[in-house]
Length: 382
Image 1: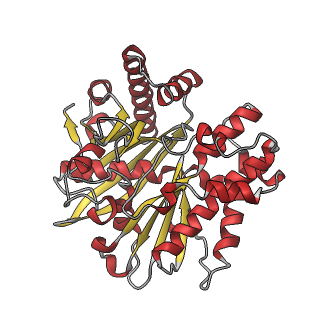
Image 2: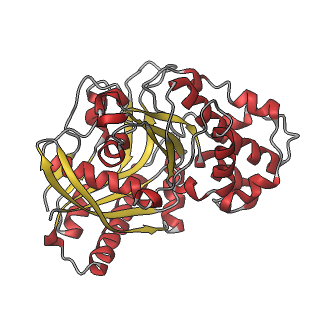
């Protein structure tokens, strides 16, 4: 048995996820993967506010960055201790921790309107402190090696999805509904070279931000507020005209493209806030459906995961839209597939840590656009 921990905080800032997996090599390029346990911890409000401010400031203060990194590492270390205690394990039982960190900015295309066009992705993390606090080796900085190889550095989870969920005779899809929605389309016969994966557009990032502005809390529970409003067709059409939705694959995006200032450019000021929320929910659904149609893939099933998988209004509308196509695509829950929807992404980074320790590639060039497979992440000794 080889135990790995995976840590993830998403762009929606809804919490820190930690997953404990048993990952044992089964062949020269495959592993036997078993989920053992995990936790989904809310971010302390002071840390959440600090991270949100860092994600929205033009000139990041180095002291604030350092303080946020320290607080995030301490929270992660406490989560590790709590999970290991619950499983009656010690630090010596764990091979490595895979720590994704908090994405502060993701610009795989660079800035087209600035002299420096250098693409970059920035995850706030302190793997050295985490290793010191836990006494466990830490693998971190997963994305920049893919970027260095000419890739988008995202999404990375499709490689893990392919290892877990590929079906022998049919296409299967996974839909991660975090701050940004991303699709993984898994071909039959476990052919990783043909896996399709990309960000479809906004999910929780706009829904949460608009809800926080008008209702005072970050989450529209079960999509109830969105369900109380009416979709504004003209607004939905304007939002769907964004350049990102027309970009060819491979592609990835983030809050840098979809934020409240971007939304404000399309508002007249007369809209009822609940109607805007309903329209944002439809934007998520329509951008997913359109993205699926553009791939031309007919799925046997689609499995939602991430925080948005708890949004009943979103899933209901998505299911209705998927039923309208030439071939209806049913939604199959993560639980039915034997996995926890909230902890799937954290599990992915436990697996990516294992791939780094085993010196096996962790990216899929067909997904990210990298020039080839690469071993991802840096290893920080205990």
